[in-house]
Image 1 (cartoon, rainbow, N blue to C red):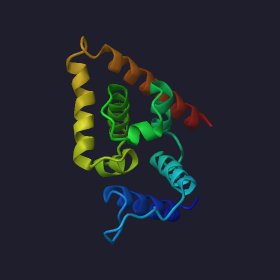
Image 2 (image 1 turned 180 degrees about the horizontal axis):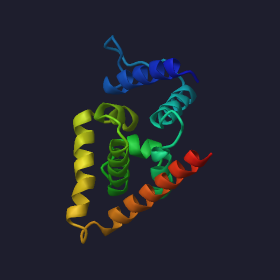
Image 3 (image 1 turned 60 degrees about the horizontal axis):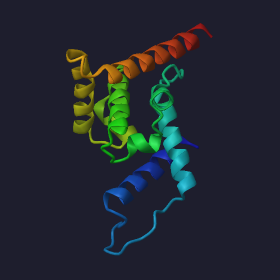
Length: 155
């Protein structure tokens, strides 16, 4: 899928969700794109989040290590497993130089919410006794991202 088409689909879908199923009129309606098109656009957004040489598979690594799907990361759920996956993804993407806005577009959050997610992940280090589980997951994800980055550099 072309990036321009993916952006168009995601913007439309985001507008549809933000307005709770209502576009410019006051009557409910269906999204303009199919679920398959929206899924492909989300996949394209994830690929775009990786740098141009594909060194960082941060989102994919978080999904593999936490067992939380992309839909779970992007959801509004406040269940701890989803929140931890979001915090790890936001923290690592920020560390790799992405802006709060770019991260927010991928994980379906505002830039201020992404800022808070990053702060929470950094807070874990100041209280390791109460955040052992989260720190272990973060360390595993960091290690896998580092390994994939090194492997792509040697190719």
